[in-house]
Amino acid sequence: MSITHASRKLSPIRRLVASLETNACKQPIVTKAILMACFFATLIGHSVFLSVPAEAAEALAQATAPISGSIEPEIVSITVPDAGTFGGDIDMRAEIYKPAGIGPFPTLIFSHGRTADRLDRANLKHPIPKGHVRYWLAKGIAVVAPIRVGYGATGGPDLEASGAFINATGVCTSKPDFPHLAKVTRDITLTALAWTRAQPWVDRDRILLEGQSVGGFATIATVAAQPPGVIGYINFAGGAAGWPDRAPGHSCDQEQLREVIGELGKTAKIPGLWLYAKNDQYWGPDAPGDWYRAFAAGGSPTEFVHAAELPGHDGHLLMYYGGKLWSVHVDRFVKALGL
Image (cartoon, rainbow, N blue to C red; front, side):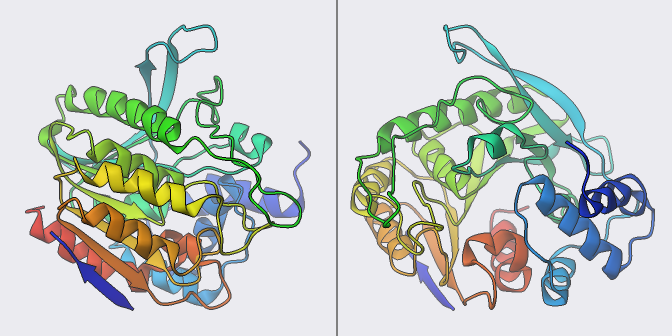
C-alpha cells in the first residue's frame, strides 16, 4: 500500500435477499454471518452481482462499529431546479440516516456511482450500503444519500451521459465530455448540500462529502467550487468512462480526464482523502495516481492512498470489500478534521 501526501418473478436468490432485508437484517442483534448476508443483499440492490466471501464480511465488520437495532432511512425529496427533460424541476429522492440524539449533527453527503447499463441505472434502489451507513453513524455523523437525476426512483433524463464509448475490441472511439459531467454532478451535489445545510438537525458548518466511482468524480468537481460548510471530502475510486467488460484496467480517454481533474485542482482548497486499490478494473493501476498528481499540483491539501489488491475481486469495489484497507485511513482523516 502506498500513501502520498500533498498540500420480475423473484429468483431463489432474490427471495432470500428479500427475506433477509425483511427479517434478519432488522434484528436488534446481528451476528457476523447475518451481517455478511445483509451486505450481500445490499450489493444485489446495487446491481453488483458478486459472491461475498468470509474475508469480505470480516473486513466490513471490522470497519463498522456496532449499532444496535435496524437502521431504516427517512425518505425525503430534494427539488432540483430545471433538471427535467423540458426544463422543469425534478424531485430527487434521498435517504436520510441520523445517529442517536437530537443534533445538530455533522453530516456526510454520499454520491453513488454509475453503471453503463440503462436498466441498472433505472433500477437503483439504495444509493449507499447499510454497512457503510453504520460506519458513519457509529461516529455520530448523519448521512444524506441522494439518488441523482437519471437514476432509480428519482428518474428524469440521463444528465450524466458523457458520450464515452468503448467498442467490442476495447478501443475508446469517442471523446467524452468530462467538463459536462463535472458540471452536472457538481450542480446536483450542491443542490443536495444547500438542502442539507438548511435542516435544523444538521451542523451546517461541519459537512463531509463522499463519493464512489463517478460519485467520487462528482465529489472532486464539487469541492472545486469551494462549497460552504464543507470541511473535508473522501473520494473512493473516483473516475469516469470505465467499461471493464470491454476494456479492463483502462477507461476511455484517461489523458483528457487527467487534464479536467487538474483544472479542478486549481480551485479546490478543502482537505481530501483519495482511496484506490491497485487492481481497479475500471481505471487500472496507474491512471488514479496520474489524476491525483494533476489535481494536487494545484495546491489542494489532499492525501492519496493506493491500497493493495483485493484478491479475487475488482479493486473498484474497495469501499465495499476493503474495510481492513481503508478504515484506518478514514478514521485518521476524520479525526484530523475534529470529528
